[in-house]
Length: 301
Image 1 (cartoon, rainbow, N blue to C red):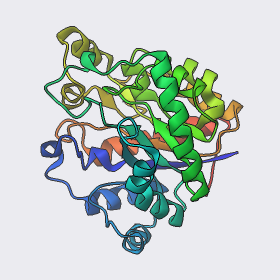
Image 2 (cartoon, rainbow, N blue to C red; image 1 turned 180 degrees about the horizontal axis):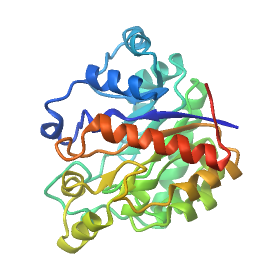
Image 3 (tube, rainbow, N blue to C red; image 1 turned 60 degrees about the vertical axis):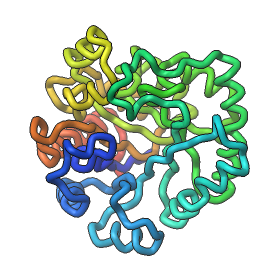
């Protein structure tokens, strides 16, 4: 039972709100992540696109590829079209021994639209989500056959956002489809992160740990703001930030109890003028190391 600790570089390189992080480079982010001690990074858009170029880039900083976002369009594409659309990423991640591809349906999401309140996100029926899950299972089986696990990322502003959506997706899909478990998105969605982990821990393959500033979340809800409004205002932070509200020790204890041995990825998109990326990323790393050890989770070397 061993975990690895990785990070998403979104604190330094925010693709949805690029003006926030315009002063930062991917190279600087990679240097910071390696210096802090992170064992891996999730793929960013500004990294080399070709497989050997990406391998050399990761090796230069001494980190592994611990996953990466994939914008899915299976709601509007047939299976063959979607396979063709994501094939290059699946093959690349398999070649680089990434733990998974982080797949999220984006054909109908509003997460990237700062003018659309998160309250307007698409909400499908149980039957619709379960039918999507059955279709997505076939994509997940194909991806696994190529050597890359597909982990579904529930996300604010998307059709799979809250605990109910996750229930329907998991119930309607084959175990080949695994779950990316994201603490911050669950709390933002009004779900209990620990309850979701207790229910679907056997399907969790990848973990994103980010905290939530409750006062900012309350503002997003009361003012009916967008997901990106919330990000810009600081709704998210790293584990270990005293302004956060999530009990990460309870989560790492549960992960230990279920013998989780995958990656725990620190991810918190913030305004670097308010939350310097190196400082906050180190807080997140130190906190996860400390509570993992206290919970009985071994950290792989």
